[in-house]
Image (cartoon, rainbow, N blue to C red; front, side, top):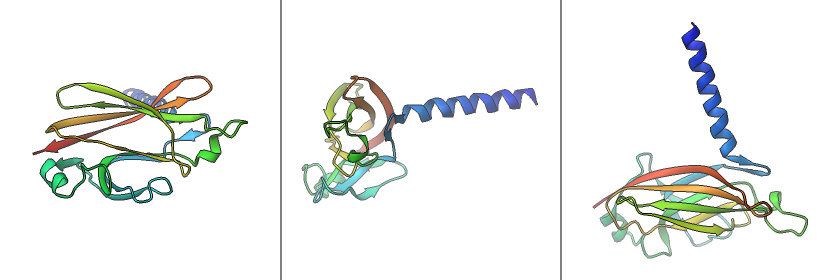
Length: 161
């Protein structure tokens, strides 16, 4: 019984820690994903074309579908939070932006950003994942006034030939 209690407390504390990472005064994670999105109305709405539970994608399939061209039905990642109007400062400027860290299958890591969110609260980033293997994307929330960077979450996906 004691063991069960300690396991419950440990799990509860872990959930609280991870939940606090996804929240920062005025900003809350609603969704993040990897897959195909339509960039036709990129600044007005997020149109997810396809996401997969396995997060496994074929380079040949994506090339055949034109998903690495950078426009149209694009392969990439997205992040969704609250509308930008809910976290502006007294000058009407958004207090939050985001960064992301992309790690390829060889272990090479590149940091991107700071970028802003579109007014509805989402962001998209095209990923040219031309190497087979496991990829990782880590999202970070950036606070304009303090410069504080807070981890939001991460995704992994696999590219096959």
